[in-house]
Image (cartoon, rainbow, N blue to C red; front, top):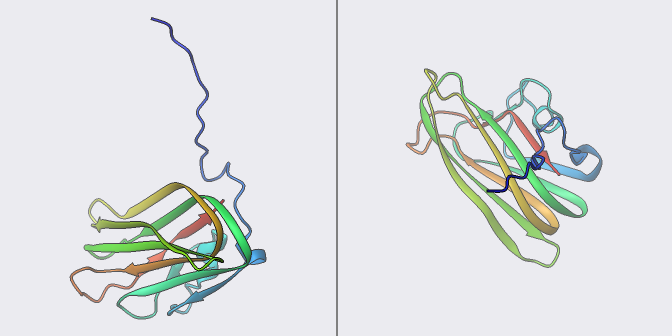
Amino acid sequence: MRKIHIAATTQSPSDQAWLDLESYAAVEVTSEESGYPIESALEGKSPGWRAAVPGTQIVRLIFDEPQNIRRIWLVFEELENTRTQEFVLRSHSDKGTSREIVRQQWNFSPSGSVQEIEDYAVELFDVRVLEIVIVPDKSGGEARAGLRRLCLA
């Protein structure tokens, strides 16, 4: 048997050259709680974004120029409530095409599972809009959506 050592090709979030969203995109959000602005999730500052009201929320990045996206890194955190969250990530191109990238559910539990980290390798071209639709509690409870971090490369 021949054995060949290869270098790992995945990069940790701190090693990646992330897209400067502040310079290249506008952001739309359905609501935000005072002290939890969407900018903190996009810039990696604590405490991240949190919605001001319960229910489905939308975070939409609108790029000044179409972007090619190779990686999407998301961090959700819930320290207080047990709940099942679902989010849908979609891209919209300049050519009018829309694509659902992923639909993901996660069960949060303060006694064990408090953080969801998603790291997607993608090949998205000419993206004009990237949209995250978050249903914070599939059972219809009063939980509010939050996003600790969002990075794109």
